[in-house]
Length: 473
Image (cartoon, rainbow, N blue to C red; front, side, top):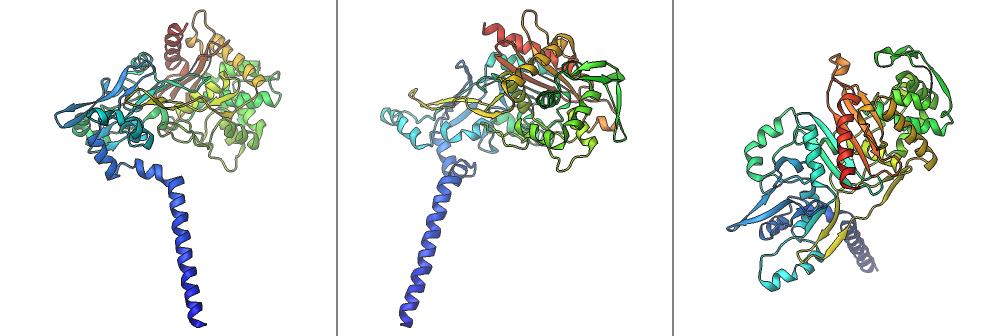
């Protein structure tokens, strides 16, 4: 009897161990496999990388943005436009690994997926070197070149996207770096140690106070609360819980509507609205617009934050103006502008449109997908009219385009330097056009410009909107 009990105990232990292994393997297959396989330290991938001609990366018009060439027995990764795509495509280095698209789609680019291996049979049968899959981006190369020229010599970021589909048409971060292996190895130490942070993809990973561009989000909440037709008395200065808040140059706008307050970017009105909306409404509208949530994307994106647990009146006033502890990425601000343009629907951002095999077969397509419903159709239309007024007769006049209705909002955001009194505000602009049937949305930020969003960022957005609409008539 004692012997039987021991056998039963052993069987129970063995069963538990067996079930544990099954559970772990199941968990690994479902949740860990992709990360482990894609890891740059995976020796099998590194060996395969050396024995496969890495796939080509194209823009939306089949312009080559990255390709591999065989130099004897060695493979060289070529980036024809050097720095231009360093924060989108990234680099592929035997010494420093991979980043951005090169990292995220590494398995496809070296043909390491099961489906890819099937489509690579043609290479094996013909005896030619095996080639990885090709990645096609939504980026429009001519627009990317234009964006880079417009922000050259400045620090900051530009994001241009299709509000209806979420496709990224251009995305530039400055400063940047040369991703080619030789240049990367020669300059790595100074690049990593540089106080300019050229490796930081500001468009997707830079975290900034949104400033007055966030007044669009506050306006959506105010419209929902029935403040659309309300008249505010703007005296140029207001004191909230002992804190004095002023408009730019202390300008007093008198009796103005919500729409006019947005157009002239009244701090006193929006700080008051922030307090009246209250903590719960402020948190709710921020979360609806995607704050404190991960944005699914083809390359890493920082999570925009609304970091308040409990808010004082001065916190609410600051958030009403887009200041305080709020932090947002330029990509997210472009998505916010897009959601207003897209009738209150925020689309998932798309950078990779498709992947094709060496034989030309489409093996992956990234289809447009709704991410969040930020507001109702009615609210989005009312907010659009307010943003149109901001461009036609407000702070965004430098974004006006003859014959095209542009909706937008400027921002001049305080930061860690302005707190010390050096006057180096960030200059913002977000907007979209044409108002009647939006085709393009833009977010521009110029770091520490010491100027306003209307003067510094709006003209850049105007030129990008003109460029895109002129080629898509």
